[in-house]
Image (cartoon, rainbow over all chains, first blue to last red; front, side):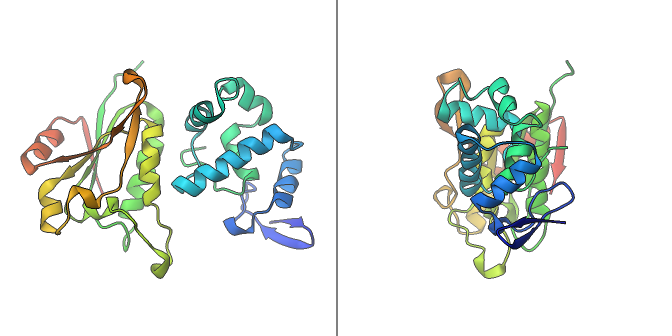
Amino acid sequence: MSYQVNGTTVEHDEEGYITTLSDWSKDLAEVIAKQEDINMNEEHWEVVNFLRDYYEEYQIAPAVRVLIKAVKKTMGPEKGNNKYMYELFPYGPAKQACKIAGLPKPTGCV
Amino acid sequence: MSEIKKFLYVNRKAPYGTIYALESLEVVLIGAAFDQDVSLAFLDDGVFQLLKKQDTAGIGVKNFSPTFRALGDYDVTKFYVEQESLTERGLTADDLMDITYEDEDDDYEEKPSIRVVNRDEMAAIMGDQDVVLSF
């Protein structure tokens, strides 16, 4: 199973999470997003970049509750809430945004 | 709502070489979703898990130590480290990572998560738990 991006092949698991984290690129993110029926805009990118920074610092993809709390802290309550985040990523902000961000599935996510 | 239980995860093994330390951390992360009263204990070689500046490049495994610093976000704020285990290994509290949490009941003030306790205090902490999980 793989994504095709700019003529290269990027392997992913049965749920669409890429297997080699260093394979990630912005173009790949767009490809994954399209498959998730998401049109990446600035708000989506803000969350995806936030997740990548979080992973860089803590080596972990946060659970949705933790993600929303952390977003609230850095971007404010108008973004750090369930409604805003689920409007951006209807199938789960942590699950879907992590997939687009090229991170592993959040620990404890079913 | 069901009653909140006190869970203690006891970590006795060095971070790398076996899977125990990483598995323990994964279980803590999963368990944190259940709103229980979670504490971690570090004794014997388990104290090495909290060392500063771990570098795993030479052994080709992921350095998961930064994840301990995220546990405050998961409301896991009690890291008990046994003094005797540190001393026996020539370590002091200064060799351990700075791990903090924000106290919601105290205007989100940053407080240290690591509490160094002696062997007797550790025994009392263990005796006080509903569930003790050893790794």
